[in-house]
Image (cartoon, rainbow, N blue to C red; front, side):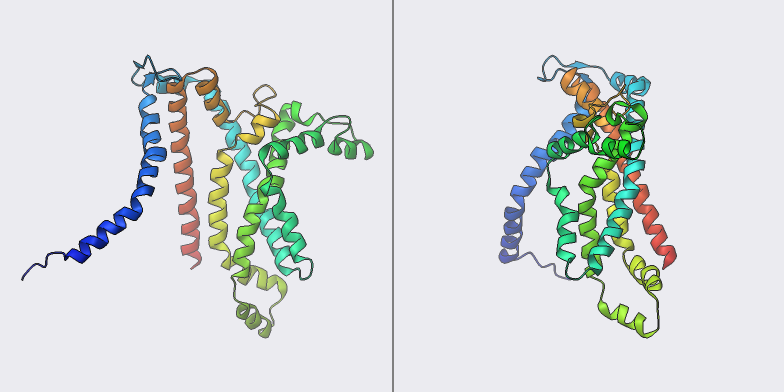
Length: 299
């Protein structure tokens, strides 16, 4: 059999494709691939923020990390926040999407009201909610005192501060999940519901037998995205409590920030970062496998 050599035209097409992909590959290598490799390399060194006077430490940063109680307490706070925020951000978004999808004339108003907080920057959101939680004149404490209850110093009480941040986060970010659910609901063909009406299905049956099963893939996507986003919590905690009181809300990313940019221990911060990155990857893969397995079982 004779082997055909690539024609000049095919080579031109290949080089043209590389030409169009080249700028992206360059940006990918400079801003993602190189920092990833450089960060892992720094985790084996004792280096300053300026990157001078590097001293090779081997696995010393990693050994110190596993023995550092602050790493595990901040990781615990991160996991607590994730466990508290992820379920309501999925469930509430679904309920909001069902309400907005069923509403006729006022549907646009609900869509705007649900999604509007998501476009606000973190500084504005935290400023609003710090005032809401403020003792003496805050809205929440005003409602408590009006109902005959005692005021609560939400952001300065260890067993209340995390709950306050979770409520703020749900109010702020649920609009994105709502938008994904709404798009998925609008993608369900009307013929499916018409056939169910002909068979005499009730609204409850249509919800649990048609709508929710058809939203399973969207729910899996939202759950994975929300889990990863919650694990990377930093902005609102840093602005509302700065990790307090008594480090009760300090997430692991804030501890990484403190070691890297306050204590100037870039190598140690890099080691913690890669340990946390591995945890995120493992959790995301396990969750994806869980949803994939449940989908195959139901099929």
